[in-house]
Amino acid sequence: LRLETELRLALVNQELLLYYQPKVSLRSGRIVGAEALLRWRHPVRGLVSPGVFIPVAEETGLILELGSWVLDEACRQVREWKDANLIMPTIAVNLSARQFDQHLPGRVAAVLERHGVQPEQIMLEITESLLVRGADNVIAIMNELVAMGMALALDDFGTGYSSLAYLKKFPISTLKIDRAFVTGLPYEENDCAIARAIVTMAQQLRQEIVAEGVETAEQMSFLRELGCDQLQGYLFSQPVPAADFERMLREGK
Ligand code: G
Ligand code: G
Ligand code: NA
Image 1 (cartoon, rainbow, N blue to C red):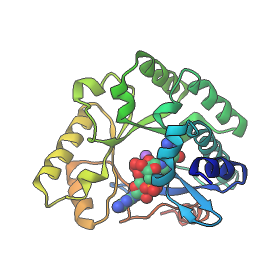
Image 2: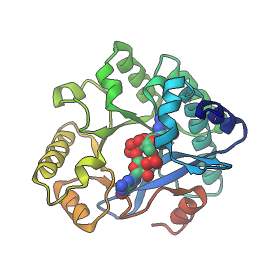
Image 3: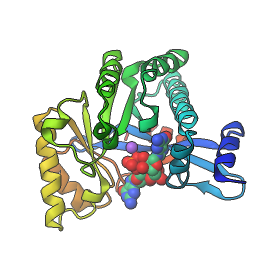
């Protein structure tokens, strides 16, 4: 079967699931958020990475159905955890640029309401390509989401073309420094300069800053000295199944 067909079946056959990767405060060392990451438990191929199937989903438009499933599942899970009296940090969901149309705020509001989840509980991660595409209504749609009480994060920051002047047009509360620039810290001079510039800029825009792909204690120290707010990466935890993330929350890490 073609991957596209298999992916359609995956939705029907409930082969999709979410993993959660904690975001940790550099100040307190505590979990202050998590990113929901899609996984596909294929009956034959095993666990398939989104790096393989998200591009196919984007090309075929199937990303709209996948994206809806992800938001719904994240909200369902948050509600379940809240009902179990866990203190929930904000859960971030990735949005594809294709999901970003005038109907998005209404759709998101409906999902939140169906699950009885507050908008503040969910963060939306978007990529720079969406800003660069720069349709006027992108800002309007973002403003609508923010007015609802949702926070927006800009993912993979530094890989695109955003400048300070450009960024401030968008109601984004969090910047995520791309893993590509974190890898070389603190030894690669260029990566250090880029990370420093991004943190300085984010501070001027009063945005929270999250470093992605943090794997070493040296990277963490460097980022802490720069004034970065949060880290996400293997140093603290890989993306883990819901039950494992729940255990981390219970242990109050
Ligand atoms: O988890 P992993 O590193 O394998 O993810 C690979 C890529 O897939 C990442 O760039 C991530 O942003 C993307 N991805 C993971 N889950 C989702 C999702 O739910 N929606 C979208 N649009 N992309 C996702
Ligand atoms: O593009 P996005 O930020 O959504 O991608 C997240 C991806 O990065 C996930 O697929 C996740 O598995 C991966 N990832 C998360 N932390 C680390 C890390 O510390 N090192 C590496 N190499 N990959 C990571
Ligand atoms: Na992301």
